[in-house]
Length: 290
Image (cartoon, rainbow, N blue to C red; front, side, top):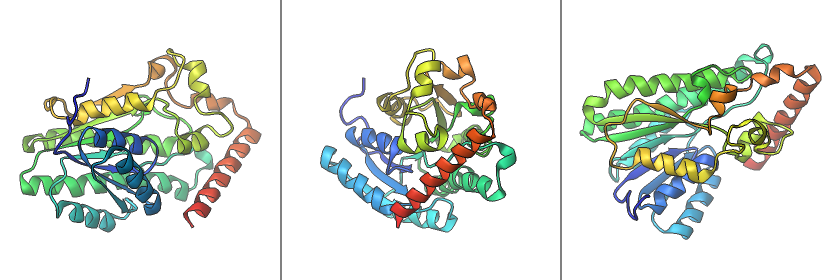
């Protein structure tokens, strides 16, 4: 479906591009000829991903170690990228999430998600968008959200609120920035198993176990399906498509709500076990970051 060099001349930044969904989209864009920029809090991971993708596909991948919660750091990164030419696209992929009863949340726990997902996404979009407008450049923004922005997400309220803000940003800036030739769209993917998602949202389950049982298509999504859809939205050829959040989940949200409502059946012991598992994973991640 996608011709060779379809994205030649495109310069795309993917936040959270060192692992998971971000890495998958970066690889597909690179394979189709785009120049890629990736960023994440762990620069070493991003450096390794950049080297791996270039060894596999050629082209150019530049890595940045940036915490998108730091607006000054974000602006410095975007300024550095634009020194060699404007971006043509931005993929807002960096995120965080974990399951919790809302009454058990602390303000710090809420902020840990909201500062990345809502504030960080705005910081990056704003830093790129205002440079596009000032320079008279067209551009495309793709954000990764969740299907719960349409029907709520019990037990993942910080993420639901923050992702809903991105959904609102997508619609709002599509109209405000449309006259400048800037498009914004979002994908709400269903379960596409990645290491981080599985350990914090489904502790104790193998990746995809729930989807295989509950999804109308009897399976999870694949990275290739996300790569192809993201390519369609970012590549030249559909410039009149903007302001849309499109769900890609095998019909899961239509059949089951696509959220975590089933966790209402958990007792205190099950919630404590989940908290312990998430805490252990966080400690392991901190140790790996040094």
